[in-house]
Image 1 (cartoon, rainbow, N blue to C red):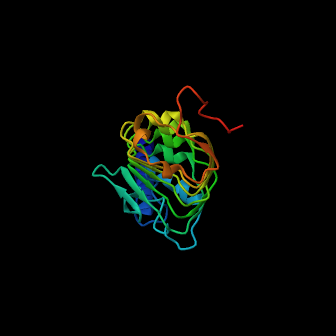
Image 2: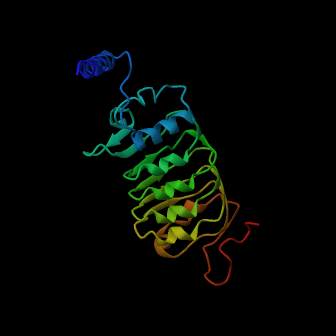
Image 3: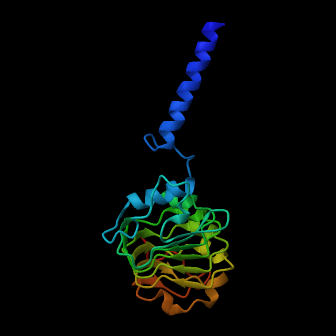
Length: 224
């Protein structure tokens, strides 16, 4: 009995010490992982930020809702990322696809390089994707066709190649598409929402022909 009481006493003492140490900040209490915060911090690590616009992005906080340029809803889920014209350089990361409540992804007028991650097609709530005036290369991912609430798709003034994905013609909500000043190839879609997109939103793509004449030319003509 005496031995059992001594063991219980030591367990209580150890517990008090641990709680005290954590409460005064000697050992930081690890908060449960926040997927959205982790995803955004991965983006931060991939970017050069000479103007320190991401200085408030502290990964030890419970969620990223207090970070500058990040907006959340009442449930503390990220809905906006506003980093346009922020003098950022680097590349996008696949982890951005984990922001399932994101509605606005604004990264225009920076020096973003690399490709558009296919995982952005997982942003099922996205309304606006603004990546214009960067240095993005590679193709437009067909997975963006899964963004059924997308209204604005502005990818102009980059170095994008390949055809305009026909998967985009299935987005009935799409009102604005601008892919001008790239190096796209193939033909300009004319079905679905593209029926009302002005042709000058496709200009200055030397290998892009159109508008598409259905059945008369392959949509990826000039792409080989």
